[in-house]
Image (spheres, rainbow over the protein chains, first blue to last red):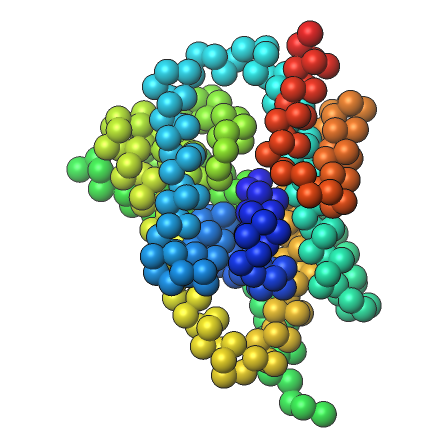
Length: 155
Length: 176
């Protein structure tokens, strides 16, 4: 859910890295253990400013959630059933799915070229969405295949 | 001691949080509900709903909330720190390796990522579809999703504004 925001801030507004580099970090963030948004913030932080950058990124990613939830847990839990709030989220949540889809589209346009890419995307999506294959399995397979292509002998 | 239990449980959850927030829910259930009985199933799903609606990853929101329920403010700090610690360790290591391999064999590293790209994008697309399945239940919500998609792709409008406007639209359409 944070993905569109992170990309917009890091790549578009601050221009701290290209979409290609962002996607590499996103790949690391997705395929490694750990919460994706936290992983991504750490990787970006390292890239932009070393260890202190990583810590800043971590705090930036974690603290807003931490404080909002504390606030809600302490004071506002009772208001979460309110019809007003539910109506707000009925509007906001579909927008989130559209925004995430938008980021996939934009990144895809930039880096996907050729038959392999579209085939791989399609097959992975089918496995994940329709056949409910465990994402970890897809990740491991993906890493294996990618490692093989990276180390293939030069023709 | 309870702080240690909180730490261990959420550290485990942090380690096994791979492939998207929704994949971690069964593990969280196992640790929080069936393991330590810190929450009931119903309470847990209330929190998941709240965690989905509030800013930030589900894992962090859940850690903060459960930590608070179990041991107040110190509990929320311990649980939240525990859930991000695996990321700190693992990603720092991977970043170092990434930099090293980009220097030593940039071509190979690029090929590696190039091959992995469509798979990673498929994973994220799955997340978008999950949210869509939960959030799109009629034509109006479908419209919001499409418009949000178009705005994200073709304009530079800040995503936060898009979400805010969509929420307000939700209020107008469903509350008033």
